[in-house]
Length: 328
Image (cartoon, rainbow, N blue to C red; front, side, top):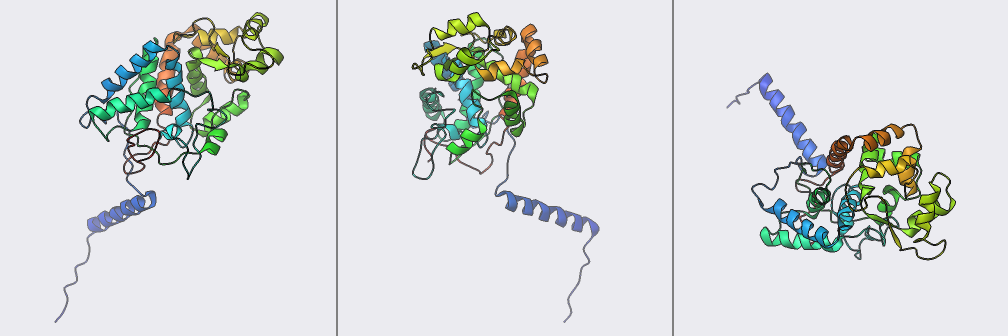
């Protein structure tokens, strides 16, 4: 008894080859990674965004400074392992988290607000919205709440099951970094010099601790003498490390372009602020934004969207945490 041999057609061979390539790709990646989308929760949790917005507005109405803190949380999260909510995790027996990193310890704040937002969202649709996405949406809503720009937040991130103090300390900028270091750190995350200057504009709101700017007001020369003298009143040469000062002394509670005007007048509070107006690669951006608030708003919004795309966990990677401070 013989066997019927069928010669495969060309179309079949092409289809088979494509199928094998797809399967090999899935195996090598471990999962199928979906793209982020601004409509990700439209069906799964249609009230997610309004719930987050309401909670953020309440928090900022209680304390205006919280707007800057929420934007900073998203930034510090994305620069370590990508935008995955890892910054929110407390230490465990298996890893030391990012909260204790030098750039975060005693400085990054707003965790209790994120916990409250998460609790409200869980009441609406449990196990659906990630902490990483809450950070991204809260940053946008915080900007709007203090008169800043808005943008469409891309969603669909999942939460990391781990965090890394060492990665935080090697990836997040320090207040003492010079321009070349800043450009290198942002470039490592796919962000160029223009986007770095635009994102730095978030310092138009918020405050900084004395320890982060003491050297600048006492030892640096590229600073307005009157401004330095004023800042010394609340930041002694010894002690008072945690004393606070507004980064933008003119309009500390409003999202505007005064931050850039201050830099041109040599009134940047942090070294990492003033160095933006000390190098040929960034001076033009500072000047542009100081003269054109609309351009600053537009570029800031675009840079925030791009930053939110840094290595997100999607598909079946990571998890949706029930509580932002701990893995499930």
